[in-house]
Length: 224
Image (cartoon, rainbow, N blue to C red):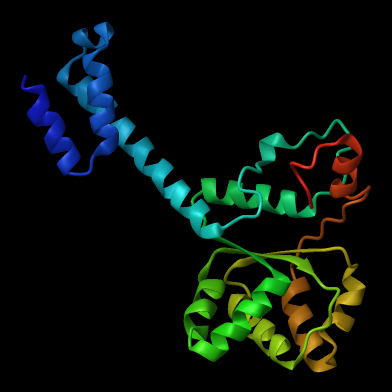
């Protein structure tokens, strides 16, 4: 078998997973007894795994999570770890990416700044499409600043287009019964909250802020 031409051809076809497996298997004594069908099966398995890993990494880059390393498996339910709402949201987002979902993370204040700039430079349609087409949109740190007229309109457009189409995860230090005051204008508030709260799962976290907990222990690697 002409190993080098085969390896070069695999790489030229962008079958990187197969190429890596081909090199590894060539150096393993146990693979000498495998049939051609078994060899091919192992190469295909590696290529499939390699492509899925690349797709996951691409979804994570697009998501731009604040805590990219957060995952549900790292949650310790046995100790009083504090309330890390942003970290937990990112852990759920990572799980969604692993399952093949598209995710976008936005902090509320920065999102509104981004939308304001997008209105001015003509990027709004593209930014709006990204917000509404992603399967999971995370809006982190709702409130406490009240929304202005432009922010209310933009938020209304986003939740309207996402309603019963995509999932929206919102984190906030404020109880839901105060969100009406954050939106300020009653008509918009009723319409927005009806779409956000309807069929929503509410998770109320109790305990001290994770940021305060980490400061006490001298570990600030994870924060709200």
